Each structure stands twice: as C-alpha cells, then as structure tokens.
Image 1 (spheres, rainbow, N blue to C red):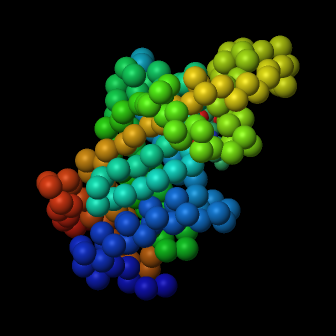
Image 2: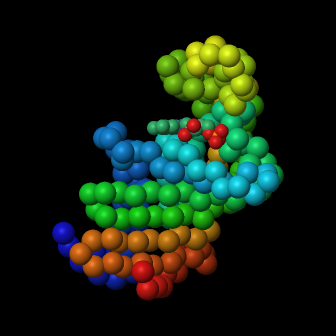
Image 3: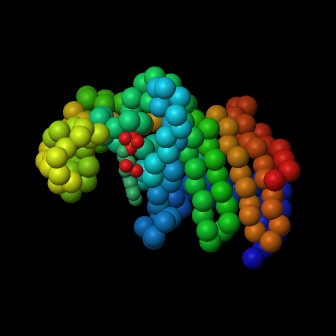
Length: 185
Ligand SMILES: Cc1cc2nc3c(=O)[nH]c(=O)nc-3n(C[C@H](O)[C@H](O)[C@H](O)COP(=O)(O)O)c2cc1C
C-alpha cells in the first residue's frame, strides 16, 4: 500500500480515475455507487445505483431510474443529492455534493431508443414501483418509456479520502475549475 496522493493534483487525478472506474468496471462492487437524497419530509434516503456517465472536469454525473421511485419525488421536492463511491483496491472514497436535474419523455427518447430490450425492463412496473402488492412477484414488467428518467447531476463540491497506511482528506470546490485544500481526516 502506498502513502496515497502526494499532492492535491494527484488527489484530483485519483478522483477522476475512481469515477471513471465506477462507470467502466464490471467487477463485483466496482460499478455501483450510493446515491443519497432527502425525502420530502426530511429523512435521509440512500440506495445503490449504477453510475452511467461521469466527467469530473465538467462536473457532470449521470444516473438512470424509474419515474415512480422515491428518489424522483425527493429530487422534485429538493434537487440536492450526494453520490458516494468507495474503491477498496485503491482505498479512495469520494463523496460528491450535487445539484440534480430530471429528464424524461421526449428529452430521453434517443437514449431509450438506443437501450437494449433487456435494459428497458428496469423501467416501468405495474403496479408502479413502491406500490404495496399481495405477493413478492405480484407485479408485471412493462418496459415503459414514459417511466424512464435520466438524472443529471452537477457536482459542486467533493470530499476525497485516502484511507491507506496514512489517511489523507481533501475538499474540492467548483470555482470555475476544481480548487482543493487538505483537511484533517
Ligand atoms: C446493484 C444494484 C444496482 C442498482 N442500480 C440502480 C440504478 O441504476 N437505478 C435505480 O433507480 N435503481 C437501482 N437499483 C435499485 C435501487 O437501489 C433502489 O432499490 C430503487 O431505485 C428504489 O429506490 P428509491 O425508491 O429509494 O428511489 C440498484 C440496486 C442494486 C442492488
């Protein structure tokens, strides 16, 4: 195990790599991140999602979801979220504070058309996601394009933590480019 990033530039590079791997890696645990919102009545809500795209330099992340899920209601009420990534091989944790926008309908028509039929089954259930049902499999998959939502996230700040033999923690804020400073971990 190394001593982690030698300087803030190396920490920023490590954050870029961690996000790129979260999008690209197919191995166990690598591709899925935690997405946290606030419920409309103020409860924290965290769940696993697939990170579909990430461009840290542009401050953009992309997630896909079903219109009926609680995260959509949460973001309509308060369009703020945190994305959490932990990469056990590199010992890097990222916590990314984001502003969220929702796209669906015609705005995501091209993405829906490009999606394989197997992936479309994640969008649209009857009754809708979150509805009480009499038995565990008492629902149908509808693959409904009207249920497909893209969540566009704009990263405004992130917390980088290296948890190796030594611990290093930095905060980066969007001031046109990423400006970072170390903090005590
Ligand atoms: C490995 C894994 C990957 C998942 N990927 C997604 C995803 O990309 N989008 C999504 O909406 N839910 C995904 N889920 C399901 C969510 O964790 C969650 O159960 C669902 O979105 C409903 O959450 P909500 O009602 O709190 O919004 C995934 C779950 C697991 C275990």
